Image (cartoon, rainbow, N blue to C red; front, side, top):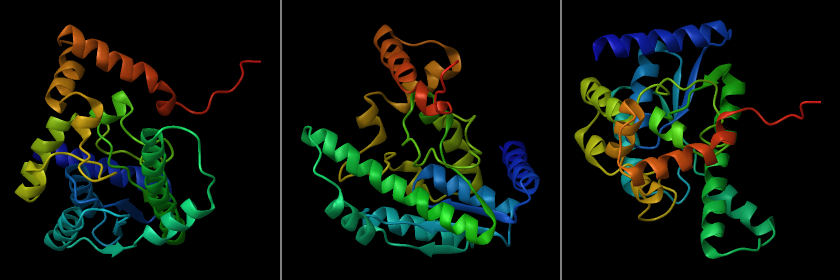
Length: 240
């Protein structure tokens, strides 16, 4: 784990330097992935790392966890509340047709995209790169918001499945309560990653790393990979 942490830290520094930028900014959600990214970013840029906590009707527990990580690892952090902007947008946006599930997802994605806008504003002001917190498990099946948490400059955890990120978190000393809590994007009350995907990270990670899984798991994951292919590519352009 020490070698892995050092390699990712060096890679972050290389990418930022190569882009002729000064440092890094990232969203600190209070979850496992963003906590690991935060520690690695601070290692790469001790004086030029900024964590941004962006509550938008978020759980108090997640906010407290984010603040705890920033304190423990002495990561400079700003809290920028987005509830007001979110509410203002909902007032001017037309009421879309569709069922309540579609509306909930549209509003959840709006929250994530507001966070992307906030990070890029700060990145532009500071001449930083925006660091994403996505891991291989989520990227592979498209479990991220297009132009939201997928709208970043670099993804240091992009080759690590969730179980590997957890092992790295243990090595780095991320608080146990963050490592042990059910992974959640915090999109709405009671939302969990595994509940929304319909598969456990253990099943997903095993399939991604070995190619082995039960028939139903294979079908589910393969369908998610195929259906989210557009998220992992640049916008389509006609071949003529």
